[in-house]
Image (cartoon, rainbow, N blue to C red; front, side, top):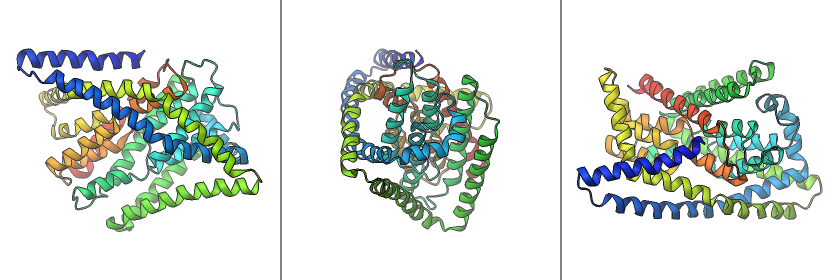
Length: 410
């Protein structure tokens, strides 16, 4: 129901603000702009889905090779001690644990094109375990919140954007983004765990947290020892080597198990088209709602109101310039990228607000887009507390990004 109310709110608030603009400001073009935005965003939704078809076919085909060769099952058994603590309703050793791990790994490497089809594959397998096919299960909610929190190790695209905008040190946002997204994910997992009464204080989880902390520490040390100019090149190279190595591993495992690798790939790839078509209505619904909300000027009113209230409290308002990117991030990834780039263009990539806009963009992922695509792919209409927990992770990521940006750049 939360998703329903939010979607309705996009249109009602946009209509009220547009009406005020017509009556008070005499803006006779606002409704034309809103209607044009609905048409454009509908077209964009279809183009996104169409663009996903090939990528979905590729990765669902690769995953089918992994299933038929037994590699996914082996991976699931290996990860069961940890992932079963986060997803207690999933049977120990179930293949979906391998799919979840593959999706999380792709997300952490910033490989969105690979992460989405892997995530849709995991959702389909979670739906097979779901006793109520129209209602989100506990594992689905945990999986969605981990995705929406956007845990990423190497924010390649953001560093590339900064380099293109002429930043003196394009990678100077690396550590702030790393810290912000870690906090967002941690808070999101805790929120879901409280809602689902999952005990996180156990040996496997504590060991995992220790490993993650050591890994992040090592990554930060590596970042400080490698020249900033080389960091973007090396991170991109390592990520793509790992990704292609996964493909080779799956294929060679299939060969070793003497399965027909090509037929397995084609079998899995066929699911790509049907999945892409299935998500079109959900994408159209949310991209149109977001476009209407943004075009009407509602986003500008919201940001201005926050800035005014913060100013009355006597708090520094320098961060307000990054709020459009922070708020749009939950709604639209491309919209947030556009606002981030526009902020760097207007204020400079090395300005405080320019850097902060990059940090808040990388702090978490596009919650509503992910909810629409992932839940839409399996026909989930009752999302329970997925939206609430996802927004809690988003909000914590924004707050962390703002505070950390003040610490690093102010």
